[in-house]
Image (cartoon, rainbow, N blue to C red):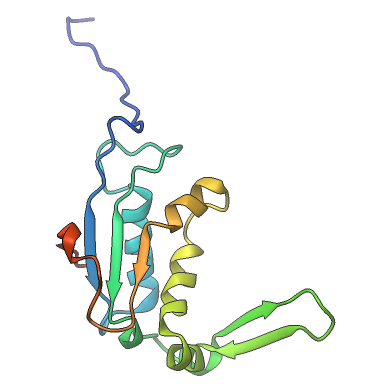
Length: 147
């Protein structure tokens, strides 16, 4: 072999740089938006992606109430919660949930695309969703992100 040596570079806490991004959800389809956000939070858009570290970026989502769902999902898609008690199962359609808590729709979609372990729960804290166009993270100077 030549004098070139190839090494696999793994990211760690000392080498990670986290950036801030802002995404406008107005008029975007929920699933495509959520998968793009999940890729950024996981760090898959970075060259030093390492699956066992939290090297993803912070994502701010604004205008969560103006997200779109394709087809008949507004009336057919249901979100089900269960308290663990008899009769404690609750169902709400996607249309009703967007009217009541539009932030919850995007949070649930992105959370479902992250790993189901303690690292996934840590990555989920890098997501900030807001119903309106304003957000309190202007000091971080987030870059606009489009999908």
